Image (cartoon, rainbow, N blue to C red; front, side, top):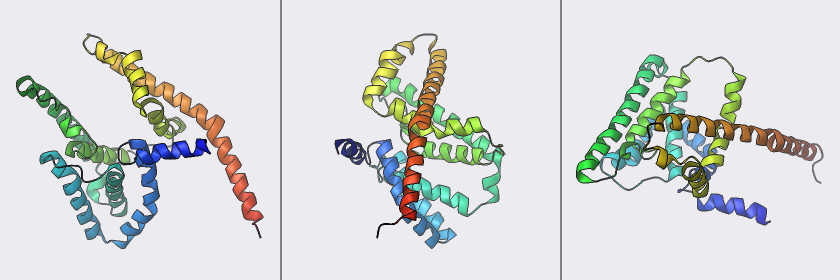
Length: 250
């Protein structure tokens, strides 16, 4: 009983504050979001997205307004944006070159905003280096994400089992290496000593090797989990559900 209650309580108490709990709960809203999306016409869908971005992104970025949405609500806004792109295809959505340049431009602008903020810190000591990209609802983060999404959406890639295998473990990588302050402390500060290496000449090499290594190791761990735990468990569940369907209780 405790084993089932504990994970549920962790999800409940992280709703709105943590990514994992909010992400899992967000999936429960998808059927109802789909009903809303299909009940709207294109103009209503577009106006709803603009309203959500104004209230949830523009005000927070330029007026420093308090957050209008929790992570669950913001995931719903992103779902509305993605669904609009899928339901109402436009010619400009398909221009890979334009969105590639847009992704590069917004990324460079994000870097520039950090550099300008760091320069201002030298005069007013305001440590807001990452203000314009500090959260997923900040305007530069939104523009970069949408631009990159449309660029990769238009890449005509053939089926690649390696890419699919690695992609299937992306969420697992997040849960393994960044789902608790204890893990972040042990990995990035105690083991890799990022804060210390940052002031050395080798910090760029250290950063690249650290990120690639952590991602690769966590991917291997998650692939092992899928093979040993997830697939056998799901097969057992499928068999159990099949038996229940063939022999319903009277």
